Length: 75
Image (tube, helix red, strand yellow):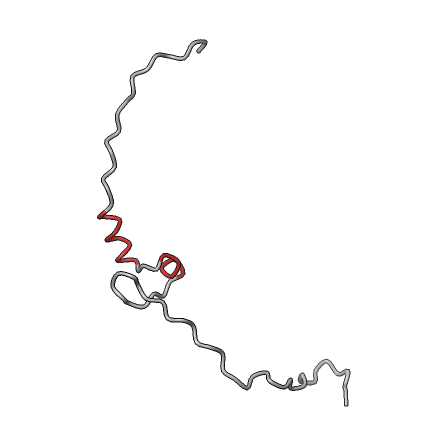
């Protein structure tokens, strides 16, 4: 029996809603093993604190120095 009433509840579909949705895969930090919650942390695979630790360990920036050169002709 079909009804064209738009306020009627939809008919139950077989197989829908019988099984619970699968749980999200738990993603942990590659350095400390804590669970990651933020999107950026999940993409990096590192928590905020661990990424900050790695940034400190990075190579120092070379000092800026001016390059002596001749002026361009025509300017």
